[in-house]
Image (tube, rainbow, N blue to C red):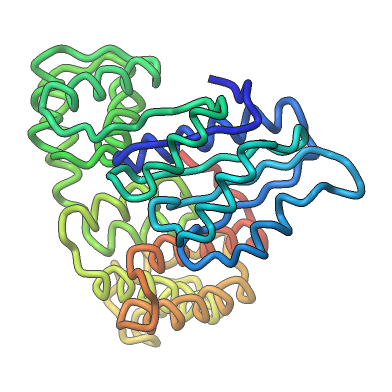
Length: 327
């Protein structure tokens, strides 16, 4: 639903649905106001003064989208400030509150709805029937068709995580031409079960952004250790750099010089195509940071891996000798 109100509440426990609701509002605002300012603030620990600055009338005009995430964790003073703002909202601001569900700061949500805020409900999808309905909708959204037994098989294979179910639905539609049966799900699931850190590294090295992120998420879901994924990416980058740094292209000669098996040299040669030496050096710095991050330097090892994958793929695209389109 487009933002017909200057106030909006995204409410509920399902993180994926909340994220999609916020994205839909952002797209709708930018369609109407292409030059709109975008602000996203975390409610926890947010000073009231910082919120006031963002919501203050602009001297230069123009529209603003302000998203305050996690308002169920907002301090009392911040909740009071938001409630007061809702009584007289600025017509040039779309303010979105994102509430993770539960009783905390429920009065704030009620104050916004009383003030006329539009509400996106994002309830937890907890039953098997709801998850199967979600899968059917996702497949339709991606332009495919799925049989009833395939839906059941996919939910049983993938589990409860909506992001994983959505990613699987999209990949199945892409891999099997839009028509999905239980056999397609079985073949797909067998392939995903074999994902390792080296599978992720291979997609990263060839610049496949979408494939890299998909295999990373599958590897994490399958329980592959963060350190093993980070090590595989680092090993792939280092090997590509070593092969690229030598003038010879003969796999046997390179294998003897680098003391590597010939199959590994051939793979590195293939993966290093499109890379420049400068790009590989930058990628090695990213992998060094990633090594520290997955060993405790970062607050979230999952996020550190995803960020590193995105950075390395971007480095290849920006500095490399060629371009490889994502799948």
